[in-house]
Length: 461
Image (tube, rainbow, N blue to C red; front, side, top):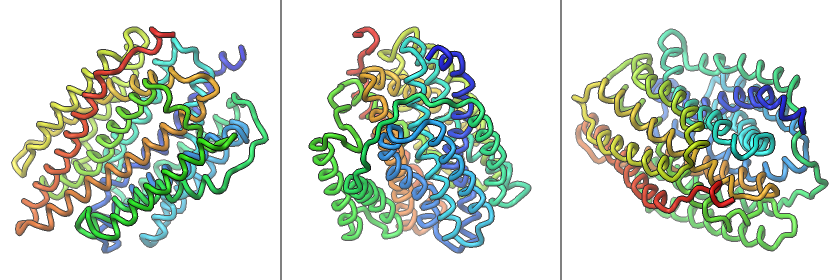
């Protein structure tokens, strides 16, 4: 283990690079939605499946990661995840149709679904508790900065090239990460000959898939309350209930739900889910607003979102160090107040809003999110005993991606429903974006109430 501690920075670099590109791909195409809609002759509610489908795949496959991390070595999982990411990136880059592009995105997501929980488990195992804040700050940089920078890079690429080059841009980084990982990554977890429970996997797929699919088709159907939407969400909820009952009764569950017995883990998880919904829904809404309402070219729309991403990268590392010194009790509620104020001001944007104001509010929102997500996540995981690390990270990553998919789908649906009910397309788009941001504001306020109950786990150990 001593040698493992010495190598941990080199080990984590390969994970950070590959995870960064994986999460970057969650939002990079958002800036290309307008162009993709024209190329494939599809509406926004259909094109958004390129993001929702990616997140849905993560939500379906991440629960399996707890099993995979006990059944296969860290090196094996890392290598397989990079192979899927590289293959999916190539398929997406050469895709001639929407269906092929969606298939490429799903293959990409398989790779990301493996790498994220493995990375978090490795950090929990190789870093002592008093140094985890700084280490998780690096993960925070990846989880928050990557989706924030995605639309900016995509906008710059599309100014000179086509959307296909967004994927070609990602490819060399994945190849480099693969070679770094093959050189430095060691196995850090104990391998056990456990059986794969196919029934649990099917129930998990039906549960998470049904709920996300239901919310996603609501945009195309124009309502949250159609028979198809309610049926899909109902089947999904039933699947999750049966899945949960089965996990409790299995001697070797696919996902150990005992993690929910730890209150600060649950509090951290709920706050994390709100943060992910806010980030991903905003990253879908703002590029559409900047291009369709303010009529900015993709490159300029991307540059509007760049300062927030840069500030966020810096703040993620700062927040990690602050957490190690001060804990989450003041950081998390304070950060949520900043997020709430930023969203309250963002919901007033219209056709006359200055892009500079968008830049300022975007920066403020991500400063707040940096102070919220990593501290809440790290504090929650710190409460778990070592034997539940793999399940704790799997649950967090699963629900994080599912919440992001649901948040994106709800935001697009609210925007689409509002826009379609307006005579003036521009006014409808403005009202739709405002209403969607209002949804984010409401859930952020709920998160603030939850954050008032947070306690510093380290003080109790």
